[in-house]
Structure formats: C-alpha cells, structure tokens
Image (cartoon, rainbow, N blue to C red; front, side, top):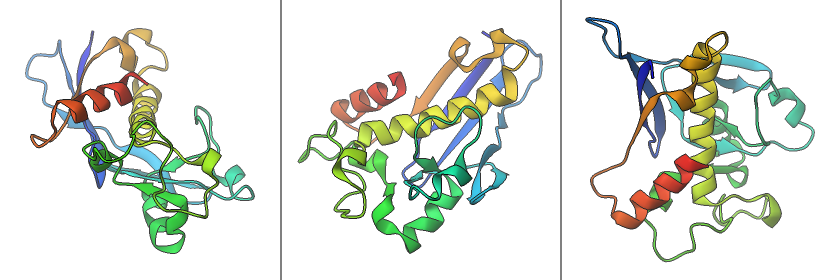
Length: 179
C-alpha cells in the first residue's frame, strides 16, 4: 500500500484526493480527473460532476477511449446535457441512496425519462458505481501504468458519506463501491 485515497462521492460533484503513505512531510493532493467537455474533447478538472449522460447511438463513438466501460458518460459534458437533454441524464444518484420509497437496485434513472429505454436505465447503486469506477480508472491511468503496486485496488481507500446517511444508505454506498 503506497497511498491513502479519499473519495467524496458527492450529489453534485465528486472528487479524489490522495496522500503518499511513505513520504515524510507529504501533503494531500487532489487528482485532476480527465473528462469530456464536448464530444471528442477531454479536459482535466479537480472535480467530476456527478452526472451521467447516455449519448445517442450516433454520438457514442465521440466518447470512446481506452478503459471506458459501458456507454454512460460521466462528468462535465453530462452536466451540460442535463439542460439540453434532461431525459438522457442521471444525476443525484447519491441522494437516491437515501430514498426508501423505491427499490434502489432497480433501473430507475434517469427518473421519469421516456427518452431512455427501460433496458438502458440504471439503478442509483449502479450510477454511484459508475462514478466510482470512473474515478478508479482516472487513478490507475495516472499512477498504475508501470507500477502495479500503485494500482487503485492496492491502496487504502475511504469513501465519504454524509452524516445524514442512515445505515441502509451507507450499506448501499458500500455495494456501489464493491461494484
């Protein structure tokens, strides 16, 4: 274990910070996350907006890169699309984890959308997992290329949850992290 990683899985934005464990006087740092600003254009930002966008089939090629899993696009462009194509954007997944009136393992996001087919919708747990996996990939891209000991899975990882989360919401966050 070389690093302590902290992830703030936020309702609006998520972030990843880290601290080298074996460097005297080391200070924590924020990992800039590469994300789509527009089709075909990547930018690095200190936070990852906690939005997921499902591009139309014709757009999907513009959002592919090595290591991407699935078709949902997280981050800055997804947040922009919330205004233009709200029916294709899942957001507030973390807040949904506190909602006890629906089955949070069921694909219900984007909520109320008729634009996304039922079989393409995702659960709040899956949405949270997609954001966490994106941060995991950002870490591995930055640190694990030549050093398997620096891989995300080999580090001490803490995911923060709000004090308002009850035991059920905390458990669902753990499920998302395990995915």
